Length: 263
Image (cartoon, rainbow, N blue to C red; front, top):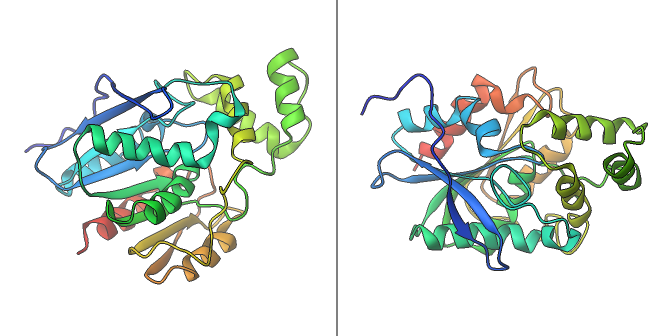
Protein backbone atom coordinates (compact mmCIF):
# COMPACT_ATOMS: atom_id res chain seq x y z
CA UNK A 1 0.00 0.00 0.00
CA UNK A 2 1.42 3.37 -1.03
CA UNK A 3 1.58 5.90 1.81
CA UNK A 4 0.90 9.52 0.73
CA UNK A 5 3.41 12.20 1.70
CA UNK A 6 0.67 14.17 3.45
CA UNK A 7 -1.71 12.41 5.82
CA UNK A 8 -5.33 13.35 5.35
CA UNK A 9 -7.46 13.92 8.43
CA UNK A 10 -10.59 11.74 8.21
CA UNK A 11 -13.92 12.78 9.63
CA UNK A 12 -14.18 11.80 13.30
CA UNK A 13 -16.09 8.75 14.42
CA UNK A 14 -17.60 9.25 17.84
CA UNK A 15 -17.48 6.87 20.79
CA UNK A 16 -19.66 7.42 23.85
CA UNK A 17 -17.76 7.53 27.13
CA UNK A 18 -19.01 5.69 30.17
CA UNK A 19 -20.17 8.97 31.70
CA UNK A 20 -21.94 10.21 28.58
CA UNK A 21 -19.48 12.36 26.58
CA UNK A 22 -18.67 11.99 22.89
CA UNK A 23 -15.04 11.09 22.19
CA UNK A 24 -13.76 11.76 18.66
CA UNK A 25 -11.68 8.99 17.08
CA UNK A 26 -9.79 8.64 13.79
CA UNK A 27 -8.38 5.62 11.97
CA UNK A 28 -5.85 5.02 9.21
CA UNK A 29 -4.44 1.88 7.63
CA UNK A 30 -5.28 -1.77 7.13
CA UNK A 31 -7.82 -3.04 9.66
CA UNK A 32 -5.97 -6.37 9.89
CA UNK A 33 -2.65 -4.74 10.88
CA UNK A 34 -1.44 -4.38 14.48
CA UNK A 35 -2.87 -1.24 16.08
CA UNK A 36 -1.05 1.73 17.57
CA UNK A 37 -3.29 3.89 19.75
CA UNK A 38 -2.12 7.54 19.68
CA UNK A 39 -3.07 9.78 22.62
CA UNK A 40 -2.10 13.47 22.53
CA UNK A 41 -1.02 15.94 25.20
CA UNK A 42 -2.64 18.75 27.16
CA UNK A 43 -4.31 21.47 25.05
CA UNK A 44 -3.39 19.58 21.87
CA UNK A 45 -5.28 17.16 19.60
CA UNK A 46 -4.76 14.09 17.46
CA UNK A 47 -4.23 16.33 14.43
CA UNK A 48 -1.74 18.59 16.23
CA UNK A 49 0.35 15.93 17.99
CA UNK A 50 0.31 13.03 15.56
CA UNK A 51 -0.86 14.00 12.06
CA UNK A 52 0.90 17.31 11.47
CA UNK A 53 4.14 16.01 13.00
CA UNK A 54 4.40 13.03 10.64
CA UNK A 55 3.79 10.32 13.22
CA UNK A 56 0.75 8.80 11.51
CA UNK A 57 2.61 8.64 8.20
CA UNK A 58 5.62 6.99 9.86
CA UNK A 59 3.49 4.40 11.66
CA UNK A 60 1.63 3.54 8.47
CA UNK A 61 4.93 3.03 6.66
CA UNK A 62 5.96 0.65 9.44
CA UNK A 63 2.88 -1.48 8.73
CA UNK A 64 0.61 -0.41 11.57
CA UNK A 65 -3.03 0.53 11.70
CA UNK A 66 -3.32 3.83 13.57
CA UNK A 67 -6.18 4.67 15.92
CA UNK A 68 -6.11 8.25 17.20
CA UNK A 69 -8.36 10.01 19.67
CA UNK A 70 -9.10 13.54 20.78
CA UNK A 71 -9.13 13.26 24.54
CA UNK A 72 -12.15 14.72 26.35
CA UNK A 73 -11.86 18.49 26.48
CA UNK A 74 -9.89 18.58 23.21
CA UNK A 75 -10.28 18.64 19.45
CA UNK A 76 -13.64 17.38 18.21
CA UNK A 77 -14.51 15.62 21.47
CA UNK A 78 -16.95 17.04 23.97
CA UNK A 79 -15.56 19.65 26.34
CA UNK A 80 -17.25 19.56 29.75
CA UNK A 81 -16.67 22.49 32.11
CA UNK A 82 -16.87 20.50 35.35
CA UNK A 83 -13.48 19.87 36.99
CA UNK A 84 -14.58 16.41 38.14
CA UNK A 85 -15.06 15.29 34.52
CA UNK A 86 -11.26 15.25 34.16
CA UNK A 87 -10.23 12.87 36.93
CA UNK A 88 -7.67 10.35 35.63
CA UNK A 89 -10.10 7.45 35.94
CA UNK A 90 -12.26 9.04 33.23
CA UNK A 91 -9.38 9.35 30.77
CA UNK A 92 -8.54 5.67 31.25
CA UNK A 93 -12.17 4.59 30.93
CA UNK A 94 -12.38 6.58 27.68
CA UNK A 95 -9.53 4.47 26.28
CA UNK A 96 -11.34 1.31 27.31
CA UNK A 97 -14.58 2.50 25.71
CA UNK A 98 -12.78 3.26 22.44
CA UNK A 99 -11.15 -0.18 22.33
CA UNK A 100 -14.45 -1.89 23.17
CA UNK A 101 -16.35 0.06 20.51
CA UNK A 102 -13.77 -0.79 17.85
CA UNK A 103 -13.62 -4.40 19.15
CA UNK A 104 -9.84 -4.20 19.42
CA UNK A 105 -8.35 -6.60 21.95
CA UNK A 106 -4.74 -5.35 22.05
CA UNK A 107 -2.92 -2.16 21.12
CA UNK A 108 0.52 -0.65 21.27
CA UNK A 109 0.23 2.70 23.00
CA UNK A 110 1.83 6.00 22.00
CA UNK A 111 1.25 8.98 24.28
CA UNK A 112 2.76 12.40 24.83
CA UNK A 113 2.67 14.60 27.96
CA UNK A 114 -0.89 14.25 29.33
CA UNK A 115 -1.35 11.36 26.92
CA UNK A 116 1.76 9.74 28.38
CA UNK A 117 0.42 10.12 31.91
CA UNK A 118 -2.86 8.54 30.79
CA UNK A 119 -0.75 5.83 29.13
CA UNK A 120 1.01 4.95 32.41
CA UNK A 121 -2.34 4.42 34.12
CA UNK A 122 -3.87 2.64 31.13
CA UNK A 123 -0.96 0.19 30.99
CA UNK A 124 -1.38 -0.53 34.71
CA UNK A 125 -5.20 -0.73 34.71
CA UNK A 126 -5.64 -2.55 31.37
CA UNK A 127 -2.51 -4.73 31.19
CA UNK A 128 -4.17 -7.37 29.01
CA UNK A 129 -4.97 -4.80 26.32
CA UNK A 130 -1.70 -2.83 26.07
CA UNK A 131 1.37 -4.74 24.87
CA UNK A 132 4.05 -2.08 24.34
CA UNK A 133 4.14 1.57 25.37
CA UNK A 134 5.91 4.78 24.31
CA UNK A 135 5.59 7.61 26.83
CA UNK A 136 6.94 10.91 25.54
CA UNK A 137 7.48 13.89 27.83
CA UNK A 138 5.85 12.25 30.84
CA UNK A 139 6.04 14.47 33.93
CA UNK A 140 6.56 13.26 37.47
CA UNK A 141 4.37 14.53 40.29
CA UNK A 142 0.83 15.84 39.80
CA UNK A 143 0.32 16.89 36.16
CA UNK A 144 -0.38 20.55 35.54
CA UNK A 145 0.19 21.23 39.24
CA UNK A 146 2.42 24.18 38.42
CA UNK A 147 -0.43 26.16 36.86
CA UNK A 148 -1.90 29.07 38.79
CA UNK A 149 -5.57 28.15 38.43
CA UNK A 150 -6.81 31.45 39.86
CA UNK A 151 -4.92 33.41 37.19
CA UNK A 152 -6.02 31.04 34.44
CA UNK A 153 -9.67 31.30 35.45
CA UNK A 154 -9.48 35.08 35.72
CA UNK A 155 -8.04 35.23 32.21
CA UNK A 156 -10.86 33.06 30.83
CA UNK A 157 -13.60 34.98 32.63
CA UNK A 158 -12.40 38.58 32.39
CA UNK A 159 -9.29 38.65 30.21
CA UNK A 160 -7.13 39.55 33.22
CA UNK A 161 -3.38 39.48 32.59
CA UNK A 162 -1.57 36.23 33.37
CA UNK A 163 1.67 37.12 35.11
CA UNK A 164 2.77 33.64 36.20
CA UNK A 165 5.19 32.48 33.45
CA UNK A 166 4.26 28.78 33.59
CA UNK A 167 0.56 29.57 33.39
CA UNK A 168 1.19 32.03 30.57
CA UNK A 169 3.03 29.35 28.59
CA UNK A 170 0.15 26.91 28.90
CA UNK A 171 -2.46 29.56 28.03
CA UNK A 172 -0.43 30.44 24.94
CA UNK A 173 -0.23 26.76 24.02
CA UNK A 174 -3.99 26.34 24.45
CA UNK A 175 -4.75 29.40 22.32
CA UNK A 176 -2.45 28.16 19.56
CA UNK A 177 -4.48 25.03 18.77
CA UNK A 178 -7.58 25.68 16.69
CA UNK A 179 -10.84 24.71 18.38
CA UNK A 180 -9.60 24.78 21.96
CA UNK A 181 -12.09 25.97 24.57
CA UNK A 182 -10.08 27.68 27.32
CA UNK A 183 -12.79 27.14 29.92
CA UNK A 184 -12.64 23.39 29.34
CA UNK A 185 -8.83 23.42 29.30
CA UNK A 186 -8.71 25.16 32.68
CA UNK A 187 -11.28 22.72 34.08
CA UNK A 188 -9.02 19.89 32.89
CA UNK A 189 -6.02 21.42 34.65
CA UNK A 190 -8.06 21.57 37.86
CA UNK A 191 -9.47 18.08 37.44
CA UNK A 192 -6.01 16.56 37.13
CA UNK A 193 -5.52 17.42 40.81
CA UNK A 194 -8.21 14.97 41.90
CA UNK A 195 -7.75 11.29 42.70
CA UNK A 196 -4.82 9.09 41.73
CA UNK A 197 -3.29 11.07 38.88
CA UNK A 198 0.30 10.56 40.05
CA UNK A 199 2.20 7.44 38.92
CA UNK A 200 2.57 4.83 41.63
CA UNK A 201 6.22 3.80 41.50
CA UNK A 202 5.35 0.80 43.63
CA UNK A 203 2.93 -0.45 40.95
CA UNK A 204 4.49 0.46 37.59
CA UNK A 205 3.57 -0.86 34.13
CA UNK A 206 4.91 -4.35 33.51
CA UNK A 207 4.99 -4.05 29.71
CA UNK A 208 8.05 -2.89 27.76
CA UNK A 209 7.96 0.91 28.00
CA UNK A 210 10.08 3.48 26.16
CA UNK A 211 10.35 6.87 27.87
CA UNK A 212 11.41 9.73 25.60
CA UNK A 213 11.98 13.34 26.69
CA UNK A 214 13.66 16.34 25.10
CA UNK A 215 17.12 17.33 26.30
CA UNK A 216 15.86 20.90 26.76
CA UNK A 217 12.74 19.83 28.70
CA UNK A 218 12.80 20.81 32.38
CA UNK A 219 11.22 17.47 33.33
CA UNK A 220 13.87 15.24 31.72
CA UNK A 221 15.35 13.97 34.99
CA UNK A 222 11.88 13.32 36.41
CA UNK A 223 11.04 11.29 33.30
CA UNK A 224 14.30 9.39 33.61
CA UNK A 225 13.47 8.47 37.22
CA UNK A 226 10.11 7.13 36.13
CA UNK A 227 11.80 4.93 33.52
CA UNK A 228 14.07 3.49 36.20
CA UNK A 229 11.03 2.38 38.22
CA UNK A 230 9.63 0.27 35.35
CA UNK A 231 10.88 -3.33 35.14
CA UNK A 232 11.15 -3.23 31.35
CA UNK A 233 11.70 0.49 30.96
CA UNK A 234 14.07 2.18 28.53
CA UNK A 235 14.93 5.86 28.24
CA UNK A 236 15.93 7.91 25.22
CA UNK A 237 16.77 11.60 25.01
CA UNK A 238 15.26 13.66 22.19
CA UNK A 239 18.16 15.90 21.15
CA UNK A 240 17.66 19.66 21.21
CA UNK A 241 13.93 19.55 21.93
CA UNK A 242 11.85 21.10 24.70
CA UNK A 243 8.43 20.00 25.95
CA UNK A 244 6.36 21.73 23.29
CA UNK A 245 8.28 20.81 20.14
CA UNK A 246 9.48 17.26 20.94
CA UNK A 247 6.56 15.50 19.16
CA UNK A 248 7.84 16.82 15.81
CA UNK A 249 11.33 15.37 16.27
CA UNK A 250 12.49 12.89 13.63
CA UNK A 251 14.64 11.23 16.31
CA UNK A 252 11.58 10.71 18.50
CA UNK A 253 9.54 9.30 15.61
CA UNK A 254 12.31 6.89 14.60
CA UNK A 255 13.00 5.62 18.13
CA UNK A 256 9.32 5.36 19.01
CA UNK A 257 8.30 3.57 15.84
CA UNK A 258 11.17 1.07 16.12
CA UNK A 259 10.26 0.36 19.74
CA UNK A 260 6.60 -0.20 18.92
CA UNK A 261 7.54 -2.53 16.06
CA UNK A 262 9.80 -4.71 18.23
CA UNK A 263 8.58 -8.07 19.50
